[in-house]
Amino acid sequence: MKVIKTWNFPGALNMALDVILMKQCTEPILRFYTWARPTLSIGRHQKKINVNVQYMKEKNIDCVIRPTGGRAVLHWDELTYSLILPTDHPKARGSVLETYLAISECIARALCALGFKANIEPVKKLKESSTACFDSPSSYEITIDGKKIVGSAQMRNEKGVLQHGSILFKEHTEEYAKLLNINQENLRDRIAGLSKYEKIELEKVVESLQYQFETVFGKAEPFTPGQEIMETALKRKEEFLWLEN
Image 1 (cartoon, rainbow, N blue to C red):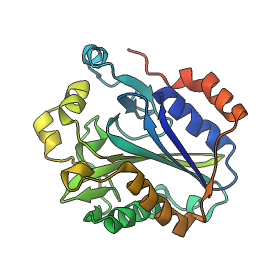
Image 2 (tube, rainbow, N blue to C red):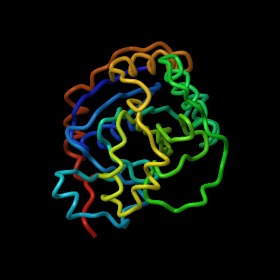
Image 3 (cartoon, one colour):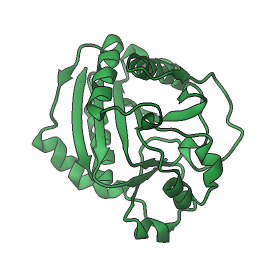
């Protein structure tokens, strides 16, 4: 398994890089990353959702479209992971939920090893149509004390599987709610960051996650995207910018 760590990339470049890596994937690729500035990422089927554009501009928040599905995520004081699996990998051959579960088990074990009481939600059908990913947990997503702490989304094509996930350190419920024009009180009751339970360094979370992913997807091999990959991602990043409707 190749492991990539990229910190503080612009949002559109983060999305483009995952897509390029997926196109070239021949073995599992696990990427950990952060964002250059606060960024709202919108699921690829959400392009026409109601975003508070004025507030977004006032707060200097970027907005991108993820290649994965799911609902909108505010990337701010969090760790993002992406896992890419080629089509011939055993964990890519199962259903969407089976792959979700395999990944969630890695994340839950990693958080529990750090002292967090992480739980995996059972299979469920969402009753609400909120535009916010963290407004409610989906099947096999991770919670602490019933509050969602990790949100994930997946896509599949002829090249394989790409799953994105956001692991919160701080909630930023006020900004999240204002961006999506939703009720902040409801969101506050359903969302939590790791810092609510224990102060922990991002690097320690990455280390624990990498160890658990290795147990399922193979020994980690540090990898740095070369010039060709980065140039291709830079050329394609405009595809992932959200444009006001």
